Image (cartoon, rainbow, N blue to C red):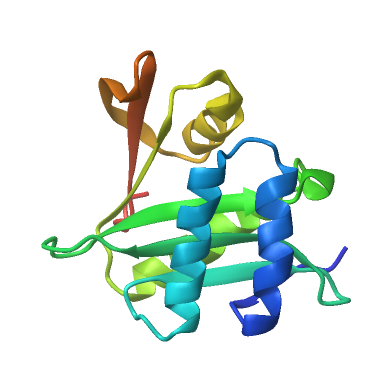
Length: 161
């Protein structure tokens, strides 16, 4: 399968909403937040960058959303990495992550952060970040809800990595 990574277009919104619903990980509130970021990006907000991965037919398989963390000199945040159920485990998230890291290095980013939930359904995401060079730097107990911690990861992007 040929994978194409490109910028988000208005034509992608409906497919991304379907993907967010099909993965059965996100609450309706989380999906609404994801869609707000998509709409913000489509409206021209430069604070968010969204790249979509498509196949050779143009079907959106997943996306990554990231942005610079305000008040930092060169640290960025990953807001979302979501891959369609049908295409998980095929290296698409890894390709999106590599694309994003190359983009951030070109922007002289020092590091990238990502935060996620400690809920069991987020275990694949936590494993993915660890497998791709992120280090757990913090865990805030009962952050999202009782027994639902916020887990924060960091990856340095300097030339030594």
